[in-house]
Length: 343
Image (cartoon, rainbow, N blue to C red; front, side, top):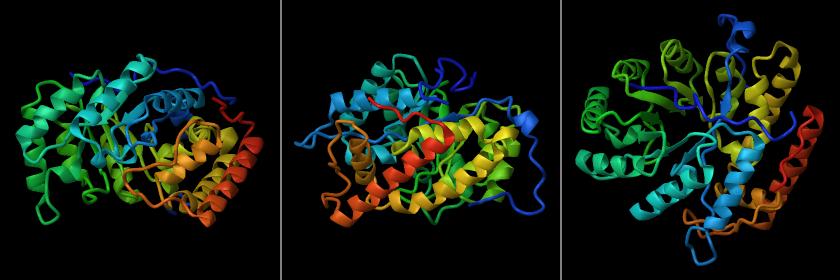
């Protein structure tokens, strides 16, 4: 039976504590939403050594940094982790290392739909679940080509579920190999299998988000938006939390947003921060994930700006831009009375 993926093991934050809903949208009940815990779950980057191998010590320091910022879960072996540039054994060993170091403090999920056939994906899903993760995440575009219908998509995912016993599953509308948005109709059918307990949404479409959120009421599935510009909107309309790349730069800020988006006393700061996040997103997204590694290194993490996604180093202008975002981040912290994490 499916259970809430982040229902147990959550720790409290160690840190101190412009898309708006469309005109005519039904009002959000902050009184109701404020009683529901919101959670930030980072899509983890992978630190590499100078020789290109995964850096286990850097990974552990990164996990400690995330935890100190107050995250309530981890998404390992994802696109930000450069999963398509890892071998099968590296995907498994990376995930296993995350699970071991987290040691049950918060849940961990990881992508498990690798392989050229359903049988190969089933085999890999079982292997990565055996690392100790709480749920195996399926990439929507791994189950239908661009030209294939939602019927094909749904049939292939359901077949995957039939062959994986009672392993808890989740969905991720990953942009690669191409972005395959789960329609509300397909979403409803998958919820009815009672196997799905996690969804990372990248649709950006607020109407689709509202439709999906309406479907997850009284359902164990937890809905996380990946789009920073939708942060305030999604959280105020019932999303369980956020899982955006911005958390690989300033997780304390996303944690604050999750904690306060539905707090009636904080709405002025919430609206201001939403606009600030949108302005910064365009700057931090360039040359990602190297931009994140540079930013984290600037924050004191012993992480090299090496990446398998691109061998092109950051240029002087890119570094200066990120230096400016870092100063902006410190200003955010000052206004919101957040103590930046230092590891």
